[in-house]
Length: 300
Image (cartoon, rainbow, N blue to C red; front, side):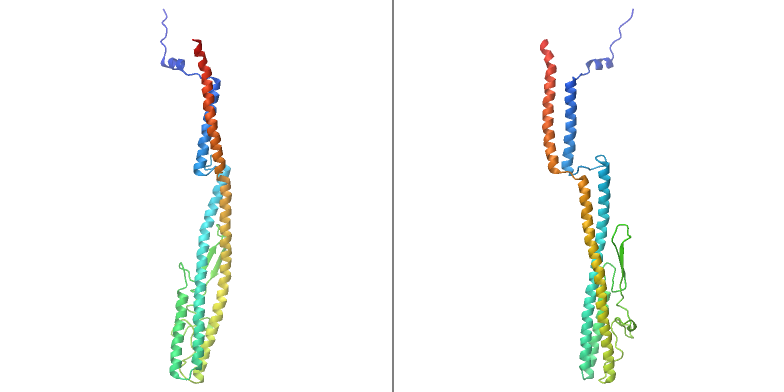
C-alpha cells in the first residue's frame, strides 16, 4: 500500500505564495519607478549636480573632470603669475628708490662743485658716500620670495600648464657693478655705488675734475636705472595680460564644466513636485486595484 508523501516546507511556501493581479503588479512597478525618480531628483537638489558620477553620464562626467582639472592647473599658474608681478613691482620700487638717491647724489655733487672750502667739500663727499651705500642697500633689499631682479637673479614665469609657454627675465646686479660697465660703480674699497675718480677735498682743478667725474657716473646710473625700469615695465605688462587671460580661461572652463554637470534647481524642484503627485496617484491606483480583487469576497 502506497503512502501519501507529507507536504514539504517548500510545497507549503509555494502554496501560500501571494499572487498579484496584473493591474496590481503594473501599479506597483509604476510606484517603484516613481520612487526611484524622486530619490534621483532629491539627490540632484541636495548636491546641485545632475551628473555627480560616471554612472550618471560618462561622457559629460569625464569632459567636466578634464575641464576642472585644467582650471585647477591654471589657478596654480595664476598664483605664480601673481607672485611674479609682485617680484617685478619690488624691483620697480627698488629702481625708483635708487633713482631718487642718485638724483640726490647729483645734487650733492653740484653743491660740492659750487663750494669754496675744503670743509664743505669734505662734508659733501661724506654725504655722497652715504647715498652711494644706500643705493647698494636698496638694490640688495629689493627681492621677494628669494628672487631679486636687482641682484642679478632670473625670474621665470610659466603661462600654460604644459610649461611650453613661459617668460624668462634676467635681472641686473646693481650691487657689484664697476665703472667700466657704465652702471652704478664701485670704488677701490669695494663699496658698491658711484665712485669718485679721486678725492673731492681740494678747492682747485683737481677737486673739480673729481667731482665732475663722479657727477658723470651718477648721470649714467640714472639713465641706466630708467632704461631698466622700462624693460621691467614691459615684462610686467606681459605677465599682467597673461594673468587676466588665465583668469578668464579659468572662468570659461569652470562655466563649461558646470554646464555639463550642474542641475537646474528650479526644474528639479518642479520635477520633484510632479513625481510626488504621481506617487500619490499611484498609491490610489494600487488601492483601487486591490479593491477590485476584494470584490470576490462578497460572493461568500
